[in-house]
Amino acid sequence: MSEIAQITSDSLAAVLENLETEAPIELDLSTNIFDAVDSFAIVDLLLETEGRIEAVYGRYVPLADETIFDAEKSPLKNWATWNAYVEKCIAA
Image (cartoon, rainbow, N blue to C red; front, side, top):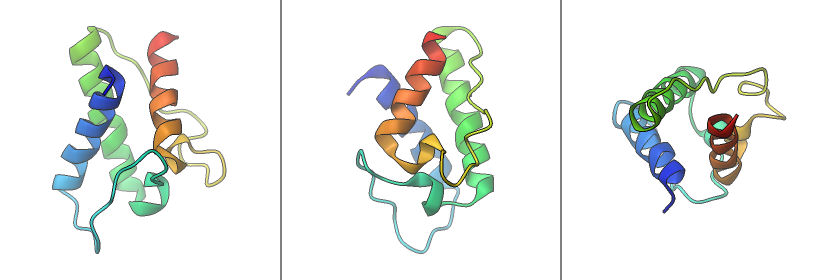
């Protein structure tokens, strides 16, 4: 598992620990987090991921943009896309 995939999956696990869902979320590369959780959990995921990135890379990397909450364009609609998005943000 890549370092970014580890950061994102650890971040999601931390958010899900505090979230009551009707059914557990099965995480694979096609998992749609956007539809699986509410907007508060998405904000928590952004903050958790940003915090972990800062701890690992030593700098703050903002992840929120105009697509995060867009029902059609959100990178959270596919876990592989989310990982690629986070990697792109770190590289920028």
